[in-house]
Image 1: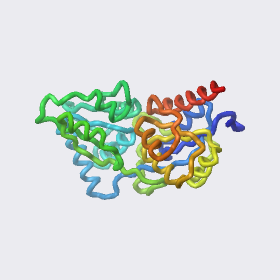
Image 2: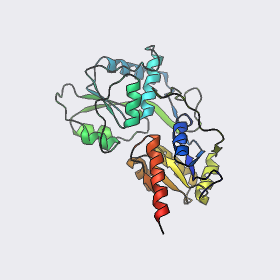
Image 3: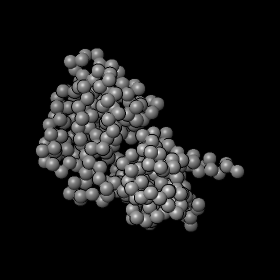
Image 4: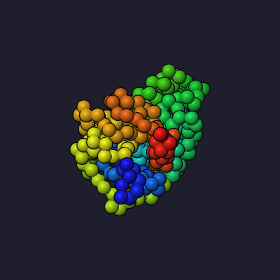
Length: 295
């Protein structure tokens, strides 16, 4: 379906603070983004949890961990925010000891870490996911120094933790932020910008939908595609559809999100090869090209 602007209408369901770069990438690919944030990211509300986070960051800086793994850009942002609260400065305050190796799940996460002054030692080549990290993770050389810090969202899957346990590592879970339904609590929202990425506004004049309007559009097929950037977003879409079938196909950011979408009856038309905005826009473009070739 084409619009007055000439391109497919694509729903961007990412949180408000992360939607703009993806919207720009879609515009560059010839699509017309439609904004409807379904989830938001919040820092922990419990003061004791914030203190615990700061203590774990201090331990990370002091070399108490053999590895630390970052599985999203949001995790980097959350730890930068907590480090700033702890009085260690702002934006580039995330400190990792020289004895600790750093793993990043994908290129966007690696770029955010490096912009924050953190060197990345492991970036999976084949698959940018927890499975991809595990496929390339080494075995521990010293079981006495085998602790791995795993900062992540409250809804993070245990894939990486369980795999590391099987390989003889000692994973330490750390809840860095919470995933909630949008719009979230303004006092707790994760508002720290992505390190190294200037704050950008979404393209002007974009259409916005409420969650109810989104569900109706998906069911009616008046959108050409919707982009799922996390398993929690897929679950939220399924709740909004409330048993209705979506006539609109979905683009998934990675295999885990695609699996979650399929488990909830959502049709996945494409899975991005990389998790950055360019990768998502490329997956949409590839789907559009494949559809044009069909008789």
